[in-house]
Image: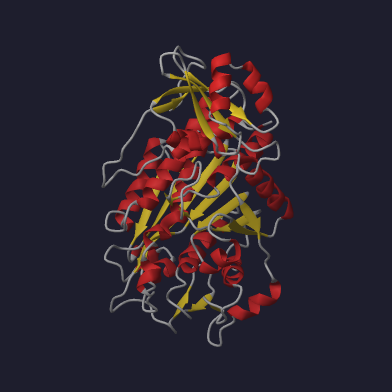
Length: 459
């Protein structure tokens, strides 16, 4: 949480400096502080931190180097939350973006402490001038919620546990929720979700909750594979190490739903979470099996490890039956996306150029990086099957993220605007605002987009 008062007694001032601003900042400091900084040969390099003492040996001020105006990392001030000793601090001057600096401070302070006691220290920040504290804290709480879900291992984040987390969130905001489990999925015409999850120790399920009644009709679909062994096309051991994060799409959907509901945005929100384990058992789906989808298209299973697109297909078909204004799906779907763009940049797909431009604009504004990838029509032929309408894989090692998106497109036709996000949901190493471990990608930028669209509609 941010400290309410902007400059309570005893708050240590933080001076943000660049090579260009350092002379003016230095001139404003007391003579003793100037002498100490000079004696220590302080240079305002990005990320450089220097503490200035007072006459009693206490910290009088902080100097912190940031990049010039064309800053690449507006989250850099978040480094302070893990570098400074306990205390209360305030911004003495403005970083490039005070709101993102305050958010990065909160996001940097996240710790996952469910199984191991974490060393915590109270490094608190006064609300910077012009920053809406409640909004920043809302986003930070939502990201922490998603990170906690992804970081939790599969023995404690089973389909039952993920369902419970989703229903708890729905209850918190009085959203209407239903769950369809086990063989009831077949009765409800959700056969692909059932096929993927039927071999799991816990039943497959679909959580469906709605919030609000008026305004923009918004639907979020999140892949909830609580653990992915690969099924009968089993993954090698090294590839299973992070498969607890294969429900990262569902976590991102819930984090975004939290932001939307707590802000009481004027939307009609629907969240659909197909939740399964992709396990191995006598009744597991097999390569070569054919299943009929909710949409009526038959799908041949070319590889049981391409299961995420199957559960999303049924959920997207269900979502599109009410023709939402905006439909977003989130999934840790393909390794090919990581080969193309690495772990930090999320590829996205949409047929709507206007929506693509909005996504790119808000992504840049809030430092939530994405990159548009193409629906390359000739590759759709790679999904052809000799015995069914579609195969769930292309049969080629190339363009895996694109062919997965093309597969989903067959089931998302009735949405007025749809975008698919192929995310990684994990920070391989720590960076300001991004501790090592689980990450909620895309949700922050879409919150900005939804807020913008819903306010324009309300006006």
